[in-house]
Amino acid sequence: MRRKIVAGNWKMNGSKDLSEKLVGYIRSEAGSLDSGVEVVVIPPAIYIGDVLRQAQDTVAVGVQNVGQWQSGAYTGEVSSEMAKDVGCRYALVGHSERRQLFGETDELVAEKVSRVVSGGLTAIVCVGETLEERESAQAEIVVASQVRTGLSTVVQGEWKNVVVAYEPVWAIGTGKTATSDDAQAMHAVIRHVLKDMGAPAEEISLLYGGSVKADNAAALFAQPDIDGGLIGGASLVAKDFVSICRDFPANT
Ligand code: 13P
View (tube, rainbow, N blue to C red):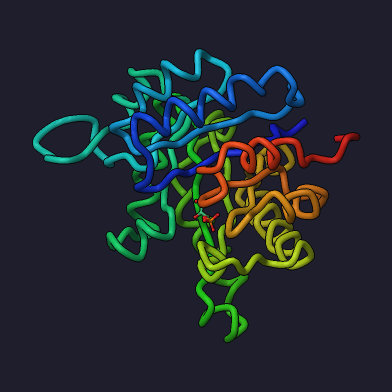
């Protein structure tokens, strides 16, 4: 059975105070959540220690980005080894904001993925097309290529440390969500590509991200190839985030 995952990407938001209140609330509700749902909080790196202390093992913690190196003269960077050392279990790789604002290519994503998964963290690898690419009917080609290149460094035995998040760029922070049918269709394409790459595709969790809210999560999570969500804005609102964590169909 695939892992069901709800991951909250705080992006460059938060504070010590928010870490305490938000994670404190999630922790207080954790006992009433479906035990089959893995809840992941991904704060700015500087708050990871605060979040880990608050989480007390009730939620998993991730890092938003890692460098492609292990250590050295790379001012401002954090390695996946360091993230694992302090207690993180997940690392986001290739978020569209990293691709668009920091020039991350699929090749760089592949390097980072290799470092993350070989070191034992789970990589949440983000893919997704722009509006222009969707409108010119290139969405599937773009996303398939991001998956093939971004995951080209994963070797047998490491796939258990891979999660793919489909985040259409036009849906991020815009209030526009892909319809659950469109999201499902792209998830099916991603699973097909993974299978074609020789990965155990049926065992790999695929998350949808892009304006997921408490009122649309259930329809998305009911789709056969959508195994959870990567949540931005709504992950900063404690009640909304926890409500999304409850939005899986009862029989899965
Ligand atoms: P929003 O949920 O704010 O659209 O952000 C999605 C996202 O980018 C999560 O990584």
